[in-house]
Image 1 (cartoon, helix red, strand yellow):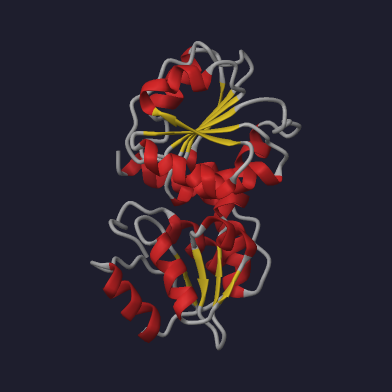
Image 2: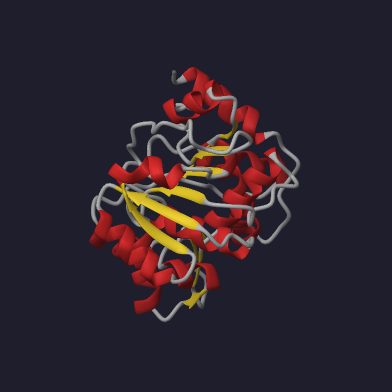
Length: 265
């Protein structure tokens, strides 16, 4: 569920896994027109569960609180939910952080997250999930850069020590000697990456286009890049297991997604 939702590749991924596992269920893309419609959908629909994307992650968290659902530690820490299990006792979880770390580990298996500053562009639910995951991996210097400084400041205050807020005008200073940059904002102009560590990693959570302007700029600087499709698949794996109660089948869903992206330009 999300708005808009037509762009989502999640149905491609989960449908392939369902077919490979021989499970006779369907994974649909639904677009409630408002938070109120989302609440009605979650209360009335005959769903096993759902993944939640922008802009409804905080609304899903509110729904879980109001319905007395079990709330996982990641979701509780971030105030953001991307997975709802709608059984007899609903559960709310966040697998975004797992997807982030899985995507980076797949590209750089031995990366040390504690080695220096990490910069995150954005201060929404995805950024919050990233902060929580990175802290769990040992990062002690996370710099939130956001167009609205007050929002970044509020998020930094929520997490406390080791997380700081920076204005967009100060992004060059935030990136100085940073060993990782993660874009968790929907729209962002590529900053100058020249001040980053020479072996830095640049990740963009967006996957349309797969090679975003930020990743293209990082490649031009000779930096390691991680695309948003890797994170999407990474967060989908624990979601599938939780929703359908089985291991994720061995299917090359990335190739399937790349074909869809190519077909849609």
